[in-house]
Length: 336
Image 1: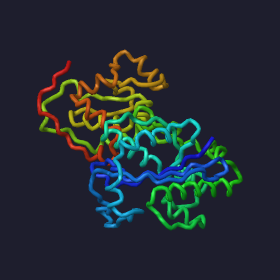
Image 2: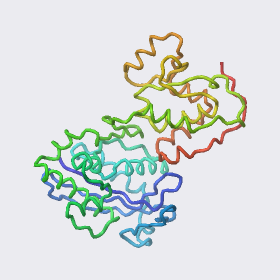
Image 3: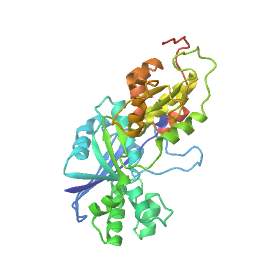
Image 4: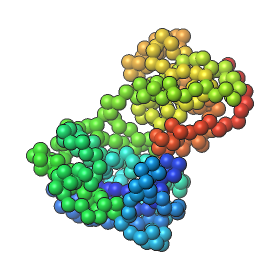
């Protein structure tokens, strides 16, 4: 087996979608000996915006803008990136890897390429698990706390190298191999399947998060009545909430706009979205003959959501989904 540490830089993240300008990686053996280190420079085909609107702070990339603009675009490097990430001999790592995964998915969507399918581990979560006393999360700050020198932050291959150094330090300080550390911190594991990002060991209560989201969404008085949704209570299977959390957020927003509710209280549920395994929640629902069971496609149709838009949601940032405003034809939807 080999370790693949990777990092991504973007020219901008307008509309919650990263426009990749570099993908750097370090390929190493299980003793952290570097086999290959490379920075793939990419033309983002979009303008550069590297300053945070709220803080005013910006970042400085590892190369001049002209270097990026002269490089090939993402689709040119797609086969090379796919081979690296999907190679079964490579164990993939990234720091706050969920962000880089979402950048990759949004670029696949922008360039109309099939989504990548791979597994990845997050060194940020790994560090948090084994160094709970530390309040640091950023790559540079964690390196400083370990005494790792930093010189070229935001050059992708160098950030990938620093990510490897953090993993190496954690192994050294706990006198364990990286594989042994991963077994003790399963929540740092993600898989990417068909454009969906899944944290199989997450302890997050997705139901609670969806219910809290629903509290802040009010029905849209400009919409004509949707008799199927209005005043009814909906619930999704636990697998759907976790594996398709972004889509679940999107559906909850539409349900609330049409005057429906989201709940986990079985005594209130009118309609249940069935997906995945027969968990205890699903088994309980199936025993209740008064609850209508539907699938994802049926609910999308009843909410009159554009299917192409719904497919794109999986590549959006959480912020973009939360800030998304209803923009559909104001028409009567009477589905009974």
